[in-house]
Amino acid sequence: QSVVTQPPSASGTPGQRVTISCSGSSSNIGSNTVNWYQQLPGTAPKLLIYSNNQRPSGVPDRFSGSKSGTSASLAISGLQSEDEADYYCAVWDDSLNGGVFGTGTKVTVL
Amino acid sequence: EVQLLESGGGLVQPGGSLRLSCAASGFTFSTFAMTWVRQAPGKGLEWVSAISGSSDSTSYADSVKGRFTISRDNSKNTLYLRMNSLRAEDTAVYYCAKDWACDNWGQGTLVTVSS
Image (tube, rainbow over all chains, first blue to last red; front, side):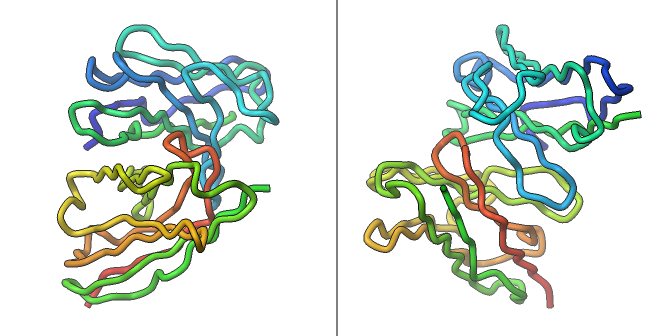
């Protein structure tokens, strides 16, 4: 079981805004930056957000990230059918001296 | 363009060993840390291990510590993961990724531990 937790699922209709939470502790999210990854069905993960709120080139600005205390969030605005995927947060944990992925959230577009 | 190509996966019996490789291209390999991440069938991502660009720093998940060894050959632009004492629960697709932030990923190689 991961020390960083996410809701197992989230959903919305096209055009809606969906938010995914990522909850950790002082040894991980509370002291390090958070990255977010998107994994489309049958493919390798892709970096979506780094350093809490930065988008790599090519990632649409519909995706945004934030962090406060020991929690982080990923928001998808203007939800599109191609956003249907699994989303994971990830962060370094100082106590474990290693990386940790969140439990993952499956986003469904209704 | 960054490219990462894993190889070395396959079927191995419990207690056996395997060495995974990740051939990198499209960036200055020696200046970036590299990471291994795995995903068991139908499960989430699990961080496995990481190594600094100069190999002076390595880290491991508790689940593999003492059994897996990460290494790299900067002259060959290749990352390795030596896996010993394999268990059924090590069955997964193993991905290599660039940097601590995993900003680029390979397509993965499947490791199946079964008798």
